[in-house]
Length: 209
Image 1 (cartoon, rainbow, N blue to C red):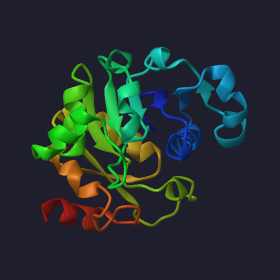
Image 2 (tube, one colour):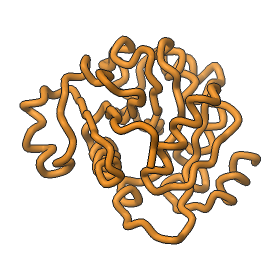
Image 3 (cartoon, rainbow, N blue to C red):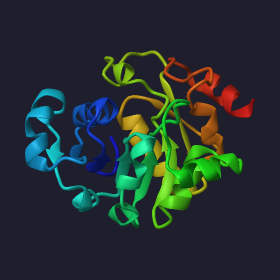
Image 4 (cartoon, one colour):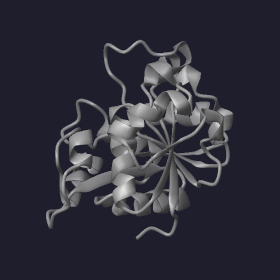
């Protein structure tokens, strides 16, 4: 069991609600926000994440240490960095080739940064950790088993990595901690274990490739 009891999730789509369901099964309280108001999300959450509490986006970080960013990267301009200031921000987003990205995002990717490094520049007052983006929402809902299901945790902050590793473990995955945030590029779409079940040994080898 983790040493925290609540998380926040920005984004109430397939990924965000899958994270919410998994966190609720782990005994965590979940606050979730989207571009819709809590009232507008009511029936959506009743169907897809009934144990999550809808909150306003500007209130997402109230009382939580960790916020999962689960919005499309094309919508990042709609996320105010102040909402997650002084929090651990888990970047669970992905870069899709046909996705229209904000200009600032495209420019920094062209400069050679990984997508999570670009997000870290944008959310400068948060501590960014890349995690959970390579786990499909189907896998999030899969029953726990004795098989080794691993997930990468990548950050430039070792303390934040350790905290997110606790979350990953609570959700039913074996955390594989990378050396730095840039290593998160090994979990992006097109890499061998994106949306593919992997063991900790396989993911460790992928990080070293």
